[in-house]
Image 1 (cartoon, rainbow, N blue to C red):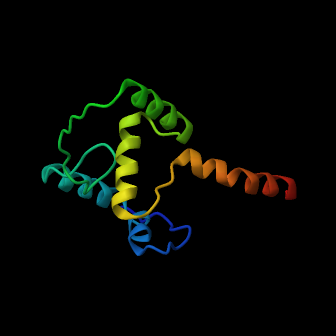
Image 2 (cartoon, one colour; image 1 turned 120 degrees about the vertical axis):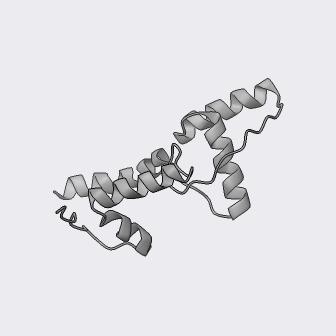
Length: 115
């Protein structure tokens, strides 16, 4: 019998708490089910199927997008475009791991000094 991993803390989103409390067998079953249903892709389970979109844009814009992706810590300019479109459509700004790390750095320095 697989034991549940301890849940370190509760999240505001009960779905995250539920996922953190899953056993390995439950995780494997969820991934297998998503794969069988065609919902598994890089980036997670239950992701919507994607559709190929082709568009032309000036080379200077692509260069600027690549530089912006690097600044924001996003792997490639196409994921950045998707992120920006998603933000615009949902009205919520998404935060990259690098942006989060940069924002938390001063707090980490305070914690390091206090210990």
